[in-house]
Image (tube, rainbow, N blue to C red; front, top):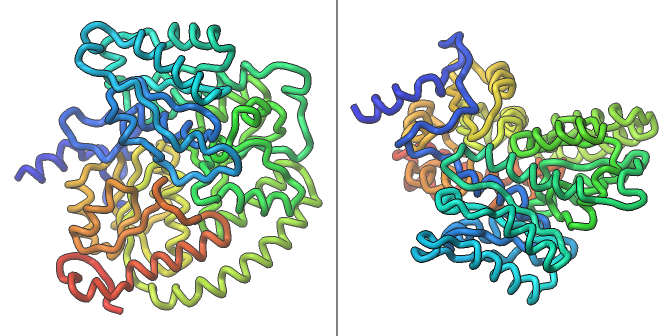
Length: 455
């Protein structure tokens, strides 16, 4: 009865393809009292900014907030490893009563003296929003005192959902871009692009950079994988922004078009179909016929190699069913296509921060009977995975225990993974990982409790 009531209260956020005509409700705050799979405002900001490798990331709040997001992404760096530290002001009861501004100023002084950074991000957490510390004033004073860039990230909780954290991170990045001065700061370079919503998980930005280099296109700076303070300040030199994770970067892309006249293009390098389409789209957007010809040669060569490898796994996986619950809508759309490439049907799909147009695209792609969810909770995921007979769940760290408790295979498609899933090489890695987890011998011992594979 409790389960039925919970599902009923969330009925506007759950749809079954072919059974409902109204649009799915999305982009709303989580229902109070409902345990959501979403992360908080602060976490949304931290996951976007943390891959900036040479910055100090200082969390103004209880130490648990810094611990929760310590080394949160599997982002790789070609230079500094500063970003892999997690610093906190470690607010206590006394700070809550008397305020934490002095403690924050002292922490900034100590960190600047010890590490000599050029850039510091200071993240607000829930408790900072409650006690009212003036983060902007403390950061401004520290910036003047030390002669470096100290940017407040207004990501205190109780004020929205994970999407609000994405926006707070983008506002911090816009401050940094706007502050870039000097000759050449906005001088455009031919076939020079920024790569937004790419966090260099397991070196994925480097894979795509190699493809683009072969086409004669250079990545100016990625937001924010393997990014540095120096590179981020050159963002205005790009002639085009391409955007992988729209959930986190759509706001920044729009603002850069509005302020600096840099157009943007949505891309996806997940799966063979979307990788090929994205390379063609970039060449077309740059209006470069030579780049387009080089892209076709690259696609023909790499697609041929990848298909030969993927065909082996496709034969083993034909007829299996997948459930997907990821952060953004565009990733979910790519995963539907990618699962089709390996012979698997998606029977349940949801996101934390999907937008209306993305849910409309998902609805067009999936088969009748597929369950679509926005901002789901564990009870919903469990119920629909079992009802739909899923053999596999794709999600992040919070979904992993649920899959294993149900005896269902699991794929980590979030920031914790250590292997690349982008590009043609990533598509082969994905197929191999799906095969390894779905067809693991372990399911012969537990398959009656959930999905699993009989092979």
